[in-house]
Length: 206
Image 1 (cartoon, helix red, strand yellow):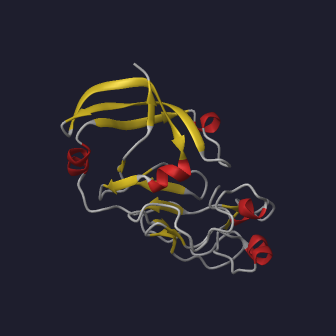
Image 2 (cartoon, helix red, strand yellow):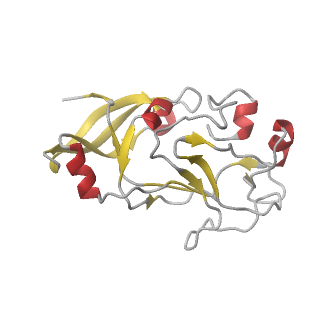
Image 3 (tube, helix red, strand yellow):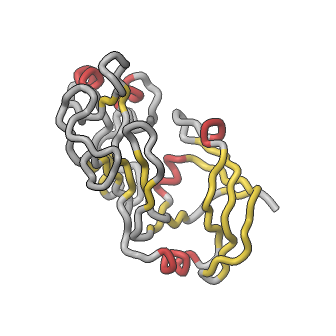
């Protein structure tokens, strides 16, 4: 929701007024592709009949555009990005991406682990609905994953907490793997990302 133009107009996104500014590391490009082949979310038009198109929301760390429906675009003085969604004509229009993902890098997942050396490979985050703020970006989440030594996964670890800020985390991503993993669609939206290497993050637990 931080990428929603409506949220920005309501003062509920810290990305308000930052289009054209650098908000992430140079390696980060975030794409919304409503017409990606093989995805259940593939569509030629949004819920308001506006033709969809592929767009770089973030390109090389720079915020290129927020996501708009017709109403929010009119208020912001821009064109709709064709992100108005609704399940039926009788429902209210919501702003959401379609296939929304971080573009992959050039390393294999093993090469990314080797580049990390020692650290944590996080595979699970719990309590996103309660432990993360869409407004401030702050999060504190129970996690699980693997301890990594010399670039190799070692013992499985669970019950530890990772904490930080989403906006600061975007700036501290050092590199990423080439393969993008997609989740299960929720409505007309599916999210995807490669494994990413984050330089620093607060971790607590035994």
